[in-house]
Length: 285
Image 1 (cartoon, helix red, strand yellow):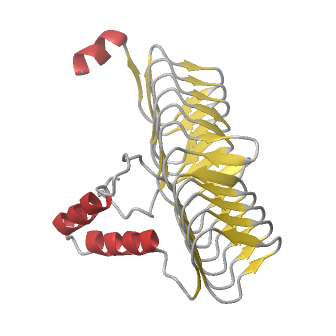
Image 2 (cartoon, one colour):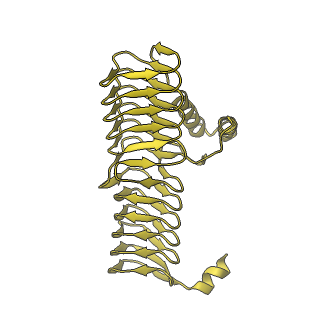
Image 3 (cartoon, helix red, strand yellow):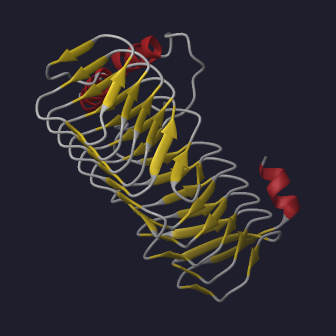
């Protein structure tokens, strides 16, 4: 986890994430900020959601699942370890929990539930959400050393560290569009469906995006990435690296493009245009 910013103030899509027909699939945790809509189902290690998050499919968590108050899940919830459900959570399918279940008041599970461990009826506070809140406050106060110590302690729980999939508060994610009012970072080797709309977009290497990229600020398209749509920024720079391909138009203020990149559509840059040759890129390294 990067400690340069509030962990819930940016869209972060880790390496290898795929948006399949009905599900978002990642090897690490899935963290969704409050009042967001995720029209997919999700599959990950731990699945953590803030208040009033809506999921349009199933949730499959290899470890824990923690849903805050007023969350709504259209399908089933399958949990490999423990589950924590806040007040007035609604689950449209079944809840299957291999470990313990902590459950708040007025939880509605339409097709019943099964838990192999203890069942406790109370109003639990999702532990990992609590850690994120504490971490955010430490960063806002400038207590970077304390924040690093907390993050290091969380990383000592015995499992390999994998970057989480983070969807910031108030976002909307579907196969049509990923809409966030925050920066977006996409790792390497991802396969995503939907247009990405964000404050800025940093796209890693060897991704396949079936949609367009649009941001108010800078957009970078990493080596070997293919974008099946337009790349547009209002006032920022677009940077297209070696081997990247944009199957659409590019509209920006400034443009930096590697000579090994390909743009199939029209290029319109209001400011500076810079072509990076292969030998210049090697010298910069």
